[in-house]
Length: 232
Length: 217
Image 1 (cartoon, rainbow over the protein chains, first blue to last red):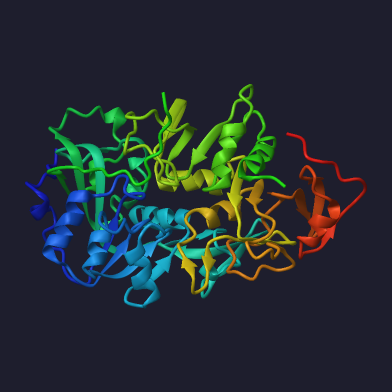
Image 2 (cartoon, rainbow over the protein chains, first blue to last red):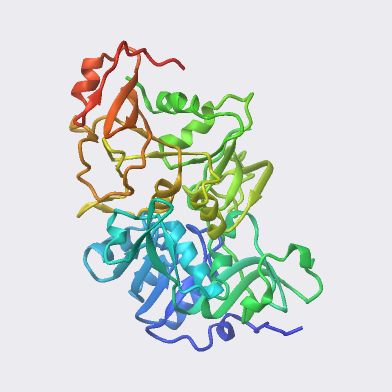
C-alpha cells in the first residue's frame, strides 16, 4: 500500500503558488472541497485560475475567494447564484470562460485519461464554437475541445482510505471523479478517512492512483443552496 | 391561455412509458407533477442522478442530494448516482429519450436561445448546450410573448444561440407547435385562444392546416 495521507489541510496545500490553475470539484455548494477553499482564502493566494462548474455564493465556497479578489480567471458552466461574480465579470476585473457543462466535465476527464482533445456537438453554431476547429462526423457537425491543464485538482469525497481510494455520496459526486488525476497533483479531502483495508474494493469509485494527497477535513458545513421540502 | 402549471400538464402528455427524461429548470421541473402514475418514467438530473424523486419531507433534506437547480430532492427506488462526465455521456450518447427545457427565443428552423442577454444577463449555459446538441427529442416550454408583448417565436433568434436546428416541439401558453421544414406548424390551441391570436403572437412563419383542435389535458 502506498500511503497518501497528509496530516492536515496545510500540508495538503503545500506547493500552491500565486498564478496557478486549480480544478475544484462540486456542483453548486454540493460536494465542494470546503476545507481546501478555506485554506486558499487563509493563504491569500493571488491571481489564480479556477476550473469549477460554479463559483459558489457570495459568502460560501469559491465566493469567499472572489470576495477577496484572489481569482484572475474562472472557467465555469453556470455562475448565476453569485452577485459579486456578476459584478466582477461585467466590470472586467475578472476573466470568465463559460463552457457547456458536459464539455467542462469531459475536458477534465480527457485531462486525467490522456486524451489531448475530442469532438463534441455541444456549442456548434454558437459563440462557444468561435475560433475552434469543426468537423463533420456521421452527418453532424462537431467542435474540437481540448483537455484542461491544471496544477492542482482539489476534490471532496465522502470516504477515503490511506491509499487514496475514494467513495462519493449522492449527487456530491458530480465533477469530483473527473478531476481526480486531471491536475498535476490531486488533493482529496474526505469526511471520513479510514485505514487501508476498510473500504470494500468493490465499492471504490476512484482508485488511489489518481490521488496524491488525502486528508480528513476538520469540519463540514455542507450548506444547502435551495432548501425545498414538502409537508408530511 | 395556459398558466405555467397547465403548460407543464400539457407537456406531461408527451412523456411515454419507459422514457428517461431530463427536465430543465423552471416550467419543465413542474412536468414531473403531472406525469401519469400508471407509466414508468425515470427523471435524470444532469448533476448525477437517475430516478429523481420529489422534494424531501421537512427535516429529511440531505445536502448531498440535490437536482440541477440546486434544490434538495429525494431518490426513488431503482435510482442511481454517477459523475458529471458519465451524466453527459448519457446525454451525448442519446440514451436520454426526452429533454424538456425553457427558452427565451426559438426560431422557425429550430434554433434556441436561452442562456445570455448581452450586457444584461450572463449566467452561463449550464448543461443546456450539451442537451440541445445531442437530444433527439426536445420539447420547449415557454411563454409565447415577452412582457412587452413581443413574440418569442421568431424567423431568426436575436439573442446568442444555445443550439441550432434542434427544437422539434414547442408548448407555449397559447399553443402546441411542431418545428418542421423551417416553419412553425400549429397543432393545438390553448382553450379559448383563437388561431388569429396565435398568428398575431408569432413573428415567424406559422403554418395552419385544417381545423386546429383545442388542447386536451
